Length: 117
Image (cartoon, rainbow, N blue to C red; front, top):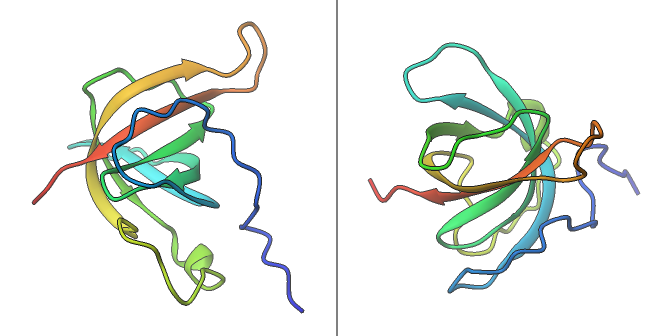
């Protein structure tokens, strides 16, 4: 059986303020601050019907608007069926951002809430 290098079962997100069920799926994500050209690499940790949790080396400011997408090479090994709330491309608002291990290079974990467009 082929093991996809993009997927993992390990959840990182520990804050649970969501009103809908959370589904763990660890795959690469590309973000872009709204109306900017620079791509930022991140990792999807989990998602729900209303948003998602990500991990990145970049700190995001609360209330910032980002465009998110799953790169094409990661889509190849995605599950055939997705739970409610999965979006391969969307616009979202940063709701929170926490440093994973202060003073080290672990990066940041942050939550996004989808815009309903």
